Length: 487
Image (cartoon, rainbow, N blue to C red; front, side, top):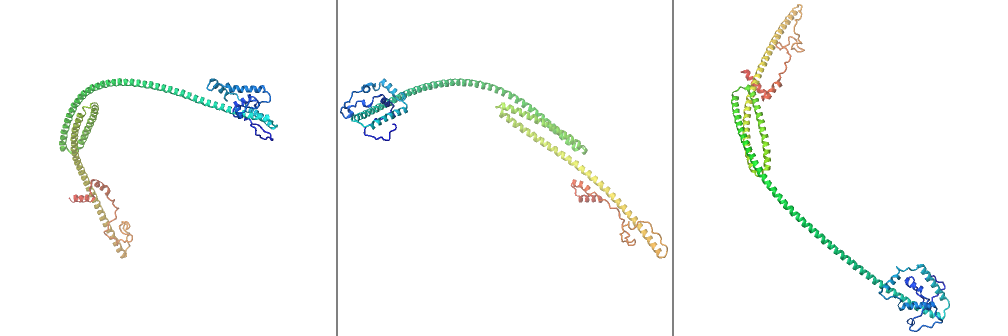
């Protein structure tokens, strides 16, 4: 409450309790009130005794303060719960009252405290002591009254707050109830709209289903009519195909019979014809076979096309599928029989061609054997001529050598007898003969054959190759050739 001098000594006198910091309303009331010395002390505060008489007449300020306090005590405030009291409390409350600045309140309180200190420092008289007691009692009463008013105001504020909260809660509940009612109404309307839409959808769905059923019945009727028409057309096509197939089968049987007769006639003629005509018959047979193969391929293509048409007809004709499948199996069985018959005919033709080929091969082998025999005779004749020529040359050489030897002996006998030696006879030199390098004419063998140039070796590989191709062994061929020569 302000600064105090260092010589301050507290005394036992009661001092006023400043309430400026705790309640602005009490501070304002103290500022407006009269000095404490002029306020009368009630009897209750002094223990039931009347206050002491004043020394002098009271001043006008004191009388005004007493009158204001009396007016306040007598009911200057409106009664509790009245609109005037509520308005007054609201105006006096801190948010609505323009309070003094805190520095001004502090300054005022400190100045009043300093004044009180100065008063306490001065020597006090009896009147001052009694006045101080009265002031203390009045201050206590004012404090209690202010506290009561504050408590009453707080209770009133609490009641008002509770009332406001109750009203707000009621308004909130009312708004919530209204919102719930609106939500329920909206939900009911939405449910009704949804049910209406569902009823409309069901009605549309029933109409659509009825229309679809009618359309389905119409489609089924049209499909039945179309199926009957297709069945009739399919039956007509099947009958037509059956007639065509029977005609083709009859033509094929006639063609097969003609081919069989032709084959038999050709086989009979082939057994009587010469081997030189085998090549022509083979070419004609191959041409016929190629034509037959082309005809067979054409029939197969036509058959495949017919199968495709039948497959398309079966896809559209469900009722005719079983019967057509049975017919197909029967036709395939007949075709299998025809194919087996053709295979047997082809096998017989192959056997006939193989027999003709064997005959041709035998003839070729015979011709080759004749050619080999002629070649062997020619070679044998050549070898015989070569051997005879060699023998003749050998005999001529031996006779010449004998003549030379005889002359040489004569010359030597003549030389031994003292005659003039004859010049040596002209003839083949010893080096050209078959004598060795160290042999003399009288020591040479008289019957030794003259060396002839070596004969080239026979073409054994070239001759044995066709034998190997024919499957003959060279030793067997030589044995056969020797047998033929001996024969």
